[in-house]
Image 1 (cartoon, rainbow, N blue to C red):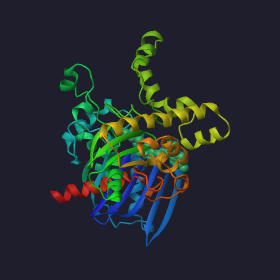
Image 2 (tube, protein in one colour; image 1 turned 90 degrees about the horizontal axis):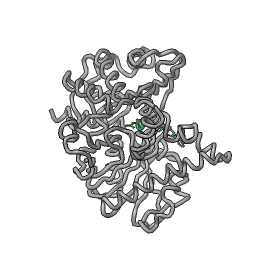
Image 3 (cartoon, rainbow, N blue to C red; image 1 turned 120 degrees about the vertical axis):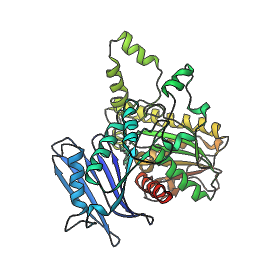
Image 4 (spheres, rainbow, N blue to C red; image 1 turned 30 degrees about the vertical axis):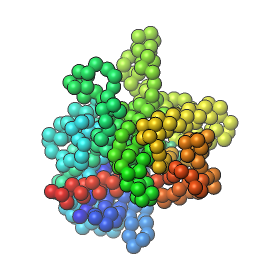
Length: 400
Ligand SMILES: Nc1ncnc2c1ncn2[C@@H]1O[C@H](COP(=O)(O)OP(=O)(O)O)[C@@H](O)[C@H]1O
Ligand SMILES: CC(=O)OP(=O)(O)O
Ligand SMILES: [Mg+2]
């Protein structure tokens, strides 16, 4: 079975083509800077253990144009990996917000699409482009089943004491206002890998996903018991451009006293805050460079970023009543040696230690970086949301 996975972002499309159930990757790629004159398409083909990379820079106006370029590459006479697009059985879509309706992977129908649209206000940076990806894929891959895998689904096991807000009851029962949590596909994947590594399915694990968006989850027995994001993917940890937790009074102050509109405040907190707002950079590599050049602001932002993670670690150890492993994952978590070091500093009393040499090793594999004999394992587990999506699609179709 061929499964094509699409992660459609606001200005990018990431994709991978899998042959399931062996999970062989035939090709993968990324269309970046959609809507710009110099959009970049990077396409990788895997054949006989080797990787070929094609790149092109050209204007790509919208997601439709982006996917039609990818479609041509898939069946190209020279570099194609398929004879016809009809060979693709399933297109698996990452959809960020699934509300309370979607606790599982779901076939996309008109009804499902309507619900995804209704959730636009709750995930304005994500659901609209996920939806666009679905509409475009339905046209291009018209023979395939379209399936949605929701970021929120994994967190639907949280108990009410974790997901409810202390606001009048009717806001939950009438409007569904509660914490949903995001990056669930990643948290599920890395928690599963860690439990497998520990050979302990019931393990108590804290997963720390640090990408552009950042979130943490407390997982026990493969189930999420708490997570740091809420109604939308905006609160909790400090992120690339999002503030994370903030006192609500800040919003009222800016609107009532300083005359900002609510839309402006929304844009500030979603797109102009986090590391970008503090330092002028949202990429951790630029921030590390600035720190090395003696930029005190960048150092303070880095301290804030790691301190916030530490606070959530403490909270989740308390929530789990113990801990078997801490897992770092995604762009920053997998690559930033110093972030891991600062998070784990002075945590020995909770069993969390770091072996500096192991922490400094760069690798694309799962690795253990705690000190020998420590009671808690500290692991770096590369995430693979696309593979997890392909697996879930495969399981859904196999069960039908
Ligand atoms: N070598 C590295 N060192 C530190 N940070 C890195 C490195 N490589 C990538 N990153 C960080 O990872 C982020 C992207 O992470 P990723 O998980 O790909 O995010 P997303 O899927 O949300 O786009 C970048 O913004 C950058 O800050
Ligand atoms: C939900 C979310 O924050 O996703 P991303 O990290 O891809 O922006
Ligand atoms: Mg991501």
